[in-house]
Image (cartoon, rainbow, N blue to C red; front, top):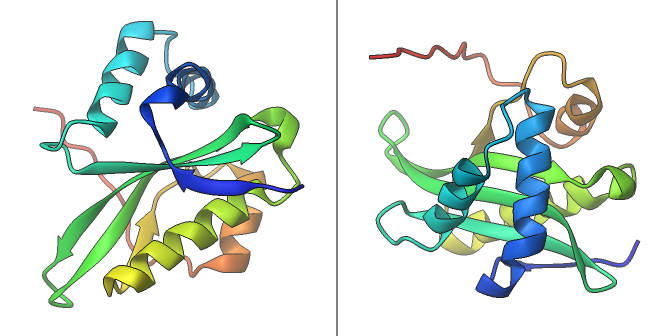
Length: 147
């Protein structure tokens, strides 16, 4: 599959939104167009410090990666946290996710960033096969504290 990976642009909103809604559904989140719209706005709000990449095939957005830099005090450096990675079902198994991760690794290298980090669901077996091939499983356990 011939892809181009590029930063998300305002013109991508309809296709990005459809993919993001499917991403939310994949993680069993309720259908909520207002949350999809809010997530889209975050990508263009400088206060959130979010950035996005899209994978484009034949003029269609078939994958997305949303991320942000974070300070890593233990290593006295900066990291990238990948918040969202999603590939349309019809484009899966064709290297889209791997190319998005490679593009994010290039961003990290270009910025002098030491690590790209992300989480996934334990039962996300298909994605984990890719992740196990291109990255190291971190030894950390994640918790959510709901105030």
